[in-house]
Amino acid sequence: EKGGYPDFMMKEIHEQPRVIRDTLAGRLVDGHLAIDELDLSAEELNLIDRVYVIACGTSYHAGLIAKNLVEGWARIPCEVEVASEFRYRNPIITPSTLVVAVSQSGETADTLAAIRDARVKGAKVFGITNVVGSPVARESDGVIYTKANKEIAVASTKSFLGQVVSLTLLALLLAQSNSKLTTNQVRLLFGELADTAEQVEDILSDTAAIDEAALACKDAASALFIGRGMGAAVSREGALKLKEISYLHAEAYPAGEMKHGPIALLDEGFPVIAIATQSPVYDKLVSNLQESKARGAMVVAVATEGDEDIRQHADHVIYIPKVRDALSAITASVPLQLFARAIAVARGCDVDQPRNLAKSVTVE
Ligand code: M6R
Image (tube, rainbow, N blue to C red):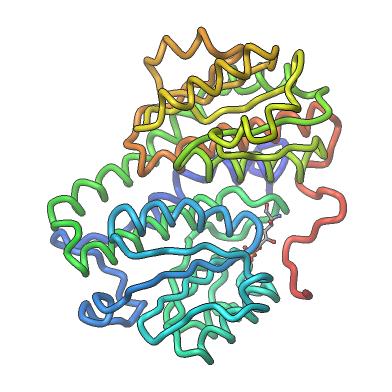
């Protein structure tokens, strides 16, 4: 049932183009987003003045990506918070607050508690989940299903991508409802979002550079993932994936924070994995790579196809197709999943069943 793949994680990574296509199928009708299951009129959507995304683990990282889109496109303040923190403080919630609860399993205890709390305080709650009829689906006012189908590997890959695509749709919907984006802009962005399915296929078709970088890093004791903007969120997920399946310690930092502490870690051969795709902050990121190289770090850069300059600043370059920055998390996350898996395999780990972790966390 692994479909010829060596493990479920690999199979699920390869299902991602299908997940993107299925999550988007039927969602754009005459230039308008059709997410009817949310059951909120355009007027009601237009009244939303604050968004909270609440989730745990990888789902929380999907939320960090969505913040950039909700604020960038819809211009609505968006906070992203781990559910176990949200539920025990007193967040500012009004009837015009939208809470988006993201959970692959749909049964994470902290996320459910946060949903209940938000509803008691009067917020509208949307759930984004992979499991039909799950508690998150049942207890939310509206739900978007991620269409990833059952995910077996404990480390989430395809459902993460489904979450990012669903949250991207939600951000587009909010921006269309409050007219911050025109119908034409939405149509254009939706088309580019759909194109990411093929771009992910492209990434999956040649993984030689990823495998080579993984071999170079596999014996490290620790690794630092850096990025800016979208790349900062993507780097968080890259570090989590690596540590949970390979037990190689990894942490992620916004690249601009390097000189405020983490740069002290760097010495000869220390792996720095950088999201260095084309973006408004590309040059700033490159200067962080220069600082890293100057201290002997081994830099692995995920960069945009055609960017030859990046080779001067990196020991290993993983090229991915060009997409606009707002959609780059979808493509940039995929090589990091493969990178983590390749390291875990090289270290002899069970990639589908990492120690100490469970697929769904139904107790606090
Ligand atoms: O089912 P959920 O999305 O609510 O689960 C949240 C986390 O437990 C989950 O994402 C966890 O971090 C995974 N092991 C990530 O690969």
